[in-house]
Image (cartoon, rainbow, N blue to C red; front, side, top):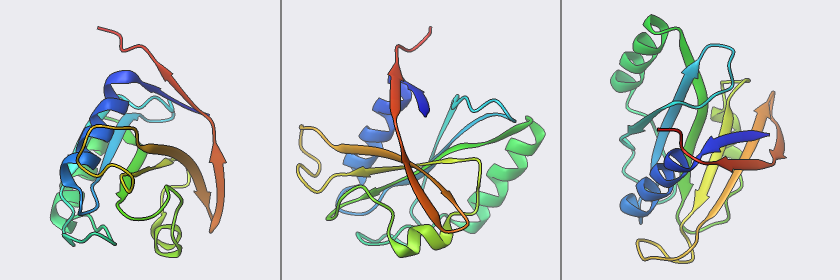
Length: 142
């Protein structure tokens, strides 16, 4: 199960809506081994595409250096789908290299940039196997 606070959930959804019609992407880091998503990191989709996302390699390398220095790891790897359901594509599955991460997908296909609900789902992807998991949204601690 993915447990995520309301502020992080809202930040992921806002990023997905803002970048629509292109796919949005990012990471939420947390203390190593904790499974607690704590630090929201919005990334730029280097592909600039409505059907594909790609982390900028320089930005990603810098982020991994920061996480390593802070004893953090990627707890959530997220991106949006702009025209399809929030389910990992074959490409998404092939790119999933963090076996401990929650892979969150947000579909903006119904409302795009406009107000309205999104489809927000989480998966574990290990060795090409996709397992959907429940999501618990908890109040944000101040």
